[in-house]
Image 1 (cartoon, rainbow, N blue to C red):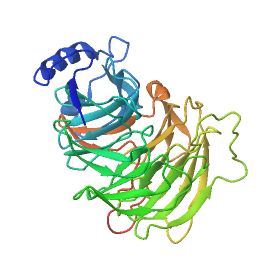
Image 2: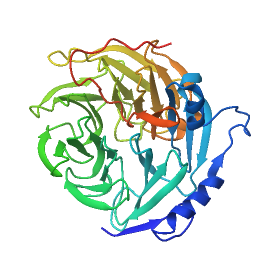
Image 3: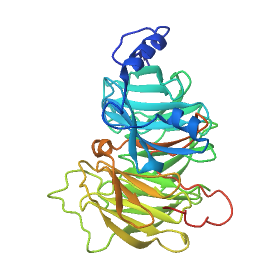
Image 4: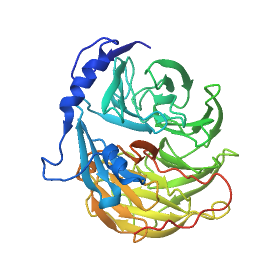
Length: 403
């Protein structure tokens, strides 16, 4: 794979990228105070408070918007990212203080995909690399050392590139499902889950060998957004053309159940123009609830999954979005388990009241968001784009204490 180093809006060599990126970022930061918002950026605010502060980062094309979760989701910081268009994935590593954005082409002959690394402490672009193939929804390992980058749903090669996060250099590859699209790394860091848009299996690869050693399925049609529990024993997957989701055993590789939303909620193919009607699925951190998007009807459905297995998921709430979707949507759960963020809508939903409680304008035009938590001027925790389960031992924790 050919690799080219560039800086956003600036042509530079590998050696000259850092300086060019710093100059760019100095001009790219936007004062939200000038826009009528009185706030501090996350680093400064966490230094002065002495407690953990929670922030939602949202990535429409060309910018990064930061919202203060603890103070009514007010906008506190904006960074302009000129030239960053077609964002397909975001990931963060508190351990290395880095944030990563994949953007550009998502596969196909002669396409160019890009990966930007942004230092959260310095507020600067570390590198912005181009690859002679596509990019898509990536994932990073818990150590912040390796990024697993799908070649893109437009590709037919079934390849996920393994990228050294520190440099952006491709150091390996994994052969997974056709049309590489979705990626999840388990909490253990030992497994990476590969979803091909045109492949009926969820492939499981070892991060030690970069080889697939298990497949889950066959599943309905192609694999679309997915999530897993903390013990890495259960997978929840959505599929092309399926209004609903499937539950599978990672241990046996078998599908346990296929779940739909009932007769009240049917797909209207005439008005819904996208291929995946449930393009968003997330677990709450305590793994008691599963939140699933119903894009054709502008709803989010909530299921009690605390008894899965052996029982099937039990539908407990149907939430109508206050702001209809502008695309096929996305679902991300906060690390506290108190909020659910709906990409392409902008709605923030309460897991306590099952109602919309806030609106993030920047989230209305993107599926890309994640949470980064700060303490003492340092990032200390993050979510992924997808809400994963975080129960690795014992019983399920109690519901979170949400305001």
